[in-house]
Length: 329
Ligand code: FUB
Image (cartoon, rainbow, N blue to C red; front, top):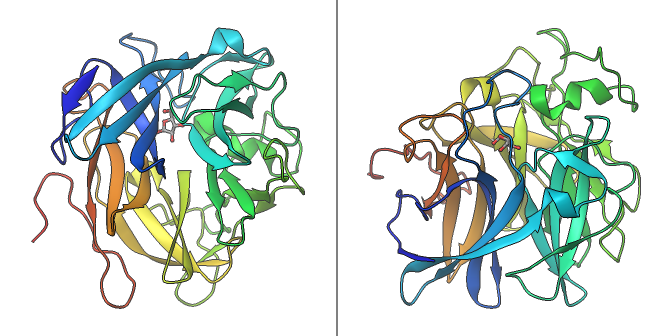
């Protein structure tokens, strides 16, 4: 299935898609999104309305300016450890292999992160029988640094259960810190050479304000909620993420892939719909933001569509804020 491309318009409209993770593989942009189903589920803070079952892979043919849907590449019924809710995935390439990282609830209802492999960026992907040991919560994002070391970032509040892991164990009663306490950060772990395990235990990523203090849990305009993404620009590491309750994509910068990161500003102002989720990729010397909104369904929070737009830097390395519904400048 192919569709003509226009910036800020849905990449595809024959299915609902969300949470786009974009990468350049084999000279094309491949997008690994969630696949929202056209169902009307109960809606709550636990995220039950996001009842996804499978993944499709999309790719952009720059010359023809079309987007292709390569079809279903992995279904929950083929993942032995997973029961439901195939949420935001990401992909990586190493060892002549394409890896698809994805969160889902296990048979106890706890979110874990799994990995599946393929010889092709288009899939299909074959899952490992078990989730990655030591993994938890949602929204994996994998970054391979210039030295070929790979890092996985993950974690999301509320439905994503991150606040339930504060002791290092899953505690059902775990809740967000008080508003004046440090906010919870995403987690990061270096991946093993085979990309199938954590090389060491996951650590919490610190996000600091302009005075070097951790952002607080009550600072909802800036604190981490879900959807981490890492990219490198001019030798600095940029961690971008959703603020959840204030519906923005913001970013922080560090000299080290594990942080601490210093908060910088907003990349994307709120879109139509509750969630916001993105990725950033460089292609042919331009930078692009992939994101989603709920415009295709007329605002249904669980029926989203993936879009893209150009992303621009200022001379000092800061990113120009994007208003999703007005052209830049
Ligand atoms: O798509 C389900 C969840 O919604 C994702 O995992 C979050 O990042 C949010 O976009």
